[in-house]
Image (cartoon, helix red, strand yellow):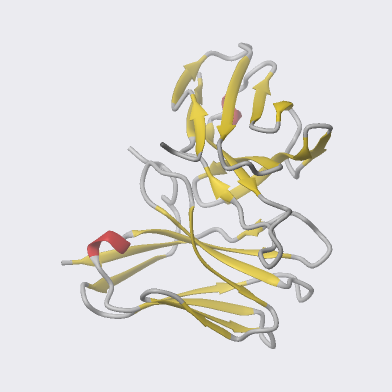
Length: 116
Length: 112
């Protein structure tokens, strides 16, 4: 079984709809991240969470919100989706407690979101 | 199909040859670097990492070289195979920040 799972894998929605993307991990990591990926732009950080009570904005948080329901779950919401939020979305985790490795991040398989 | 990487620089190599993928990083304070491989339809996969107190690190068929003087990172893949075809990203940790900064990626195509 995959260590980091994302649901749904694909989603098509309409402008103005509320969308939630979910991420679960079985790695036991305390840190979780949400990224979006656009063609030619690499990965850009939306939000990150270092533990259940810690939520931080990334470089492109406008239009998004997150919820860390448990150590293993981190969801990303688009309150009112717009077409320029069409992208690939990736969840990642890392382990801050592992001495010797500075936050190597492990990624889920991604969610392809299309906003019409 | 996969739309990531439509406008990425592309390296095309013959199967069996060695590949060298380059990355220029931005922050001289960065002290940790990672190479990721992303295959079509999948998330980025960790390949190898290196700390700033090293200039070379080897893995299985892969070697990462770090030149801090010119802020340059490279990934060498020996005896490139068709399964190596993917987009490769470098990422850096800028010192005090806990956030990875990703490069835009290079697409590697392996010709049979």
